[in-house]
Image (cartoon, rainbow, N blue to C red):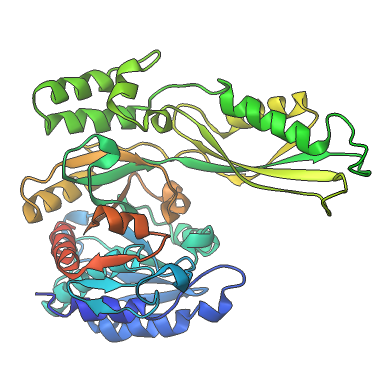
Length: 437
């Protein structure tokens, strides 16, 4: 089964679908949608297809068995840019070499999409139908914020739809996650951090650099950065989702390691145990801030009249957007700066291991990958699922596709690739999940 999946993902990767302003010449979404129709004919023959901009909503009517509620699968067709100078294979060749397909999107997320669509196409050949209605959303602009997804969510809301589970990308089958799991594990996202974008503006008087004033615009921004970087402004607390991750990991550990993970799951205060166990502990303890862009000045010898800093805050369930904004505005005001929230949302609600979507994924993974640890976690990045939160009781963020450590580094980087046999296994895993619907 799925013997030709390598050729299929190769064809998908070979069509550039780079979203975002300035990338129009590599945004061949119409050609890509036609590629999907050709490779998954049973799906498009049986599903109602509703265009939403360049995206697609696909509706497969269920049998009505036991009045099962509808579910939604979300995934994106667009990819990020790729500079070919850093690649060993052309990023849009879809080249097959050995057991791999190389190219942008092979992991994120044309590979998982191909596995899912292959599975549902195969089932439809056998005249399968889900018990409840199944909706699929194929996004066209997830990598640049998912504005079209917001429109799709509004359309679904107008139809008075409420989903028992939304399935989206997020976790994968990876190795040595955060140094906490030995070997491979299926990391299933039960939440995702919120991402907030702030603009911090410093006004100056300008003038010649030969006679620099004190407390210039750039100096005040530097003081703000230094204070925020080294201060203790945010609640440092671990959410229940992160504690659940550590408890789950402890179930697969033995001896001293098991005890350490159990203790870390209950740690509090200064989180000494957590820091000893995990080198990335700080990312699990409340909000983080990253200084991502800075601009100002017109020449090397001219004092700027304005300098602007961009701050990306990632927030967890322990402290939300309003509180973080108040803290940053107060710190900025102290340095005579203006801080404004440009965009962003709070962290998503945290699910748990007992919720139906998570249980279905766990059972499917355990059947296809016997003995593989299955672990819940809070995703650091964002997904399109944030637009569907008001339409569902649960979001599960997971693709059952294995990525070796070097492949994980290729996501949004150079030399992105996917193993063909991992694609086949992922398709079988999706097959098992779909049969449960």
